[in-house]
Length: 318
Image 1 (cartoon, rainbow, N blue to C red):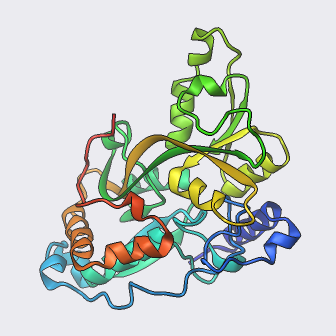
Image 2 (cartoon, helix red, strand yellow):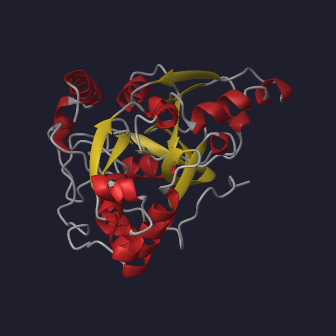
């Protein structure tokens, strides 16, 4: 499922991101070793398995198109990045773990189908949905007005945008609430993300405030972003709230979380007009109802981002 080139890049990224001592250190919580939202492949996953008990729900499976039920498989484009979303425990390429992996697997079991998961870089997945390469995409995709023009979403969690700096850096205080706080700094973020879009769209705020503009450096791999922060080539990272908070909470963390900036619903992504959305929505709601959803979020420490019900294409948060 994972082409050799991708496996090699993931292993190299993990090696670059982790100092030797930390690369050998695992935390009992089963999360990141603290060096990364970038990679964090040096930690084992939690051992509990709330997905194991999930069974097919015939009334929900019946919402799938007949050809999908007959084939029994769905092709998933999956962006593997960092805990708690999706990552490779212990730097292996055997099987990814994380909140997004568990939720997708649980939904598939409710629907009675198997997932054919294909690793892909974050920025390539949404365009590939339109071409039919994947049936569904996962990768902590935030629901935005711009994406809703070309992609359908079925929500499963509420996450969003946040910031982090190297531990000990107090220049920005304890929280970033306005992008003018970043003026004159260099910000690292992921390619094709809502973070890149936000920073690009708002780049003029510094000039309006009479300040030096901030600079944005975009990376295709999360490990490269963290390495840049550790080496002082960027001053701050903009990434997911849950990922940055999870990382900063680890005992060996080298980063400090600077708070929530903008909340976003996050969902499974589909090509516009996909006949799969109603089935996925019903499956997520079934997992919420039977308690599996809450157990998965508790496992990965993301209970504060739980949603009450899954929605199809909700409007972007103001």
